[in-house]
Amino acid sequence: MNTLSANPWRGLPATALAIAASIAVAFIAPESGYYLNILMQAATYAIGVVGLVVVLGYCGQISIAQAAFFGIGAYGVALGTVDHGLGFFAGALIGVVVAGVLGLILGLGSLRLGGHYLAMVSISFQTILTLVLTNWISFTHGPDGVRNIPRPRLFGFSLESGNSFLGLVLVATVLATFAVWRLKSSRLGRRMQAVRDNDLAAATCGIDVFGTKVVAFGISAVLGAVGGALFAGGFQYISPDQFSFAESIVLLTMALLGGVQSAFGALIGTVLLVLLPEWLRFLRQVYLAVYGAAVILIMVFLPDGLWGFVGPRLAALRRPEDPTARRVPPLPLLARTGTPSEDSVLRVEGLAKHFGGLKAVDGVDLSVRRGTVHALIGPNGSGKTTFINVVTGLYKPTGGRITFQGTDITATSPHQRNRRGLARTYQNIRVFRGMTVLENVMIGAERPGNDVARDPDAVLQRALAALDFVDMRADANRMVGELSYGHQRYVEIARALAGSPETLLLDEPAAGLNTTEKVELGQLLRRLKGHGLTILIVDHDMNLVEAVADHITVLNFGRRIADGSPRDVLSHPDVIAAYLGEPRHEAA
Ligand code: ADP
Ligand code: MG
Image (cartoon, rainbow, N blue to C red):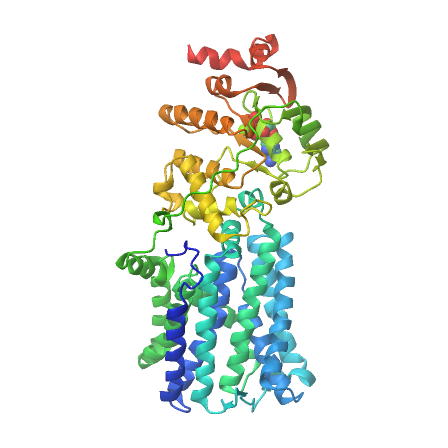
């Protein structure tokens, strides 16, 4: 909940306390034996599971190979120290780097593959690793595994005893949890969540969707390998079966059970799944069945995991810092020079988009002048949304050229276009549903290329200004998914405005709004116009269009049938025949 403040010290006191507690545990824990092993297992696994939170919880990418990365870290230490005379930390570093690189490569698969297919690739990767560890006997020792893995010294302290090494492991677990927790409210973390919630909208908010996924895979793999390296030191013996597909499923279950959106959830899930089998051992033969049933029950009744249940209740106990209550003056939205001019900001020439035989957009020319409101109208299915999708880069054109502020952008990606100042909203609202209103709008303000993008406080202020503009500051800390349809639209508009775009494309902003909301939207559009923003608006509502448009282009069956001032266009016989007859009639 308290993910919004830009306070750089947030969580540090609690982390310092947890580190002190970890060191204390190292002194009181037994030197070896059953309890030490349980603690060692839970703490090392937890680091790998916290890594899964990044890729699966934050970025929404399924990876079923975390045990493989865990194993690579473990083998880095084991082979480095036992066979190649390296120190513990040198071996660990090699394992972590190798895992990180392989994680990035696995992430590269997300360019062409999504969802299930990517999951399949990660399973294949997991299987290949197990085969290599088992069969490349001369290098890995094969199924026998590696024995007598030494423990290191650190800052002159020997960590050779089990309990002192456990201290190191616990400190690493605390640091990994802290880092992943902070990541969630960082710029990178917000990007990952935006990609998870709506990858198209993320791209048109200037986020490099593919790059963000790759980075998430890399971070996740690195954390997996760190956990594995410590596991090798903790148990001093490893073998391939400890890093098999089945273990990847265990790690995944830990993350889902605890709550994959949260680093704390990962901790809870790990501890529970390590302890549960131990607690249930007295049941002897039936223990696996009870264990399985317990896991299934928790997942069915708590779909967001244990932390999904506990977290919000804990947060409700203490009053969270409310960033919107802080006395920061909102940073004004960037005002454009409000004078309409003849020079065209967006110029589209001969644009075509064919879907097989269907010519959705068929050789359309259009030029939007700076500081004006340009309306694109036409009957349902005439190609308006397709036109916007091609202009914002979501579709590749079949033909034609798009020039934005004098640069040919026809071949660029959606996020590059947004970074040049081209923002949009969607006919079917695309907000980031798993995030708050303010976070949604902050993503807009953080658009690379925006004037405030690199300053966290200014981002917050600009986001608040955008929320003020649509009169939604009071809802800043609510989850977007809780809002009414009309308010979600305003969030989408505020998100675009916070990025101080050069040009804003609005695809049917009045769709799904009730009459009152439509009147409000009309006022909002007039205020935007007063701001000097260049706007291309698609809408059905002729009253709205007549009220704000300086220029109108009409499409029918993908072709431009009229273009000019509202008065000329709306009296054009073709336009009346194709389009206006019907709605005018309805209105009467
Ligand atoms: P409008 O926004 O003007 O109502 P659209 O641009 O959504 O119209 O659609 C124009 C035509 O293109 C429609 O016939 C629609 O069915 C078709 N179309 C739109 N998107 C796709 C797509 N992704 N694949 C195939 N046909 C599409
Ligand atoms: Mg449409």
